[in-house]
Image (cartoon, rainbow, N blue to C red; front, top):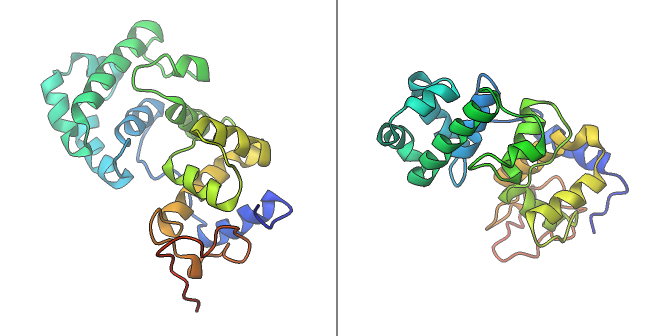
Length: 218
């Protein structure tokens, strides 16, 4: 169990290390964010941002994507990986947005989950980042860091999401999401976590317990 009495101290310590922790995807509106998040599966945000500069120049609205040839779309997003599945999902998603939602991205979890290519993680990102609603998206970094810190022992992302929502105040969900992601990327790596450099090293129940953990201290 994390040796903190309150989650506000955890957020404070992490925010001092990562004061700019926020969404790293570049987007101009909710629709562009949705497409970017779909593309980000098993792909870095940096790569997605490179791809979407050309992609959104070629197609800016759901209607544009519906008219875009599938082969052209595949070529535009090819470097993101899994491009055939992503292209098919994006086309189907844009068709649904056009036909059922008037070209607008819906603002509820239930409606978002009806869109092709949109799972709970993507829906939570949309609710939190695009619409400012309390939601915590659990990606691989949030899942790993939450377990190591003792914030959750849930076996699925949905279970971890429930545990985190119970621990943090709704107004802190967004910050918690981005701070845990940043910590996972910068320090609490899947392999060779930087335990010796971690601001949470003194309170983390998993510190120095992983093979290859960096145990040096400065």
